[in-house]
Amino acid sequence: MSYYQYGVYLIPPPARMYQIGLAHSLLATEFGCRTGGTFMAHCTLKGFTRLAEGFSPDEFIPALDELFARTPAFKTALDELWDLRQGPGKSSILIGMRRTEPFHALHNAIWDIVRPYIAQDDIFSPVEPVGPNFPPHITLVQGDAPYEEGLHAQVMGLCQYIFDTSLKGEFLAQDMQLIEFYSEDWAGNWWETLRFRQIKGWRLNEGVER
Image 1 (spheres, rainbow, N blue to C red):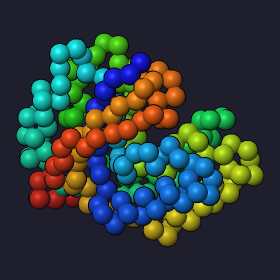
Image 2 (tube, helix red, strand yellow):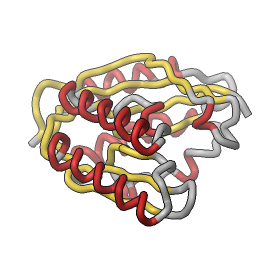
Image 3 (cartoon, rainbow, N blue to C red):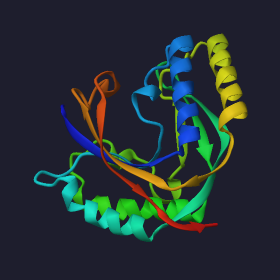
Image 4 (cartoon, helix red, strand yellow):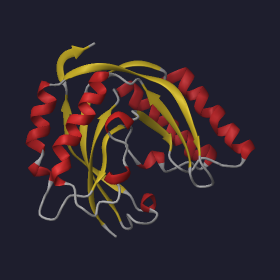
């Protein structure tokens, strides 16, 4: 199953982006954790989305333009490290972000804009956390952290050090991107052939939501 998918993402500011990129490179070198680094540094607001036949992002970009033009930038923070050790090949390490009303309102508004264009056979949107279940986060390791107990403790130790020394704390959420993704096998190991292209970027309204 090969086709294009689309998503809308909050992009951290340059200093955090730089540190996350360094973390992905180090985790790939030291522990073989490569999947997280196949993406840009981001927080998902609307993830992988297969569009219904005949539709393209051109249909909803004007609505995103209008939404982002009137949405104030807002404060958020990288608050805590999440260890999702769910089994071999299902071990992720995420950075939980501060849950605020502006963050959730933006997430919900983006979903409202994109929802009418989602294909009925989209395999990702039906299982994507949405609404009150939306867990804002940035991914350090996606699915390929070592599961063996001793190695997992070591990779968690490295992630904790990275988080504590260079990532933890507040920042201004203001930069957005619309991304086009392609994989040769969305129903299988999609991450092995994933590639992406940035279609458009926005900056939220300069008035800051506190």
